Image (tube, rainbow, N blue to C red; front, side, top):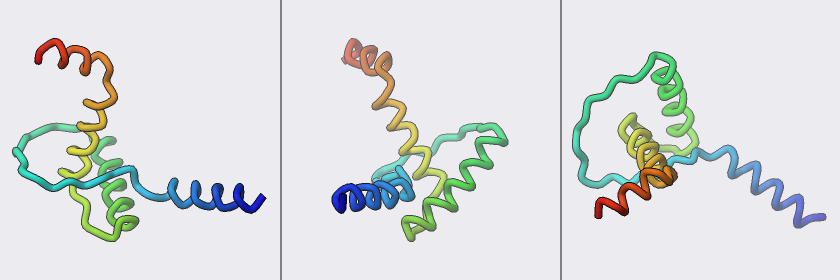
Length: 85
């Protein structure tokens, strides 16, 4: 029973951490438009992630991570990409 309690405690701790991972390398500047509602959520996420990770998180960090997550999880894109290389 103790092992389950530890597992549950760890799971609760993990669920409070942001999914974001930051890799700051060479960047290219882009311009993009997003909906007001998305901008509001992004600002809230920046507050959350910065507080939880105890470092400044930027729009760029979140967008970079989100796009890579999309690219990694889209099976049609992965298949298309394999055909192009």
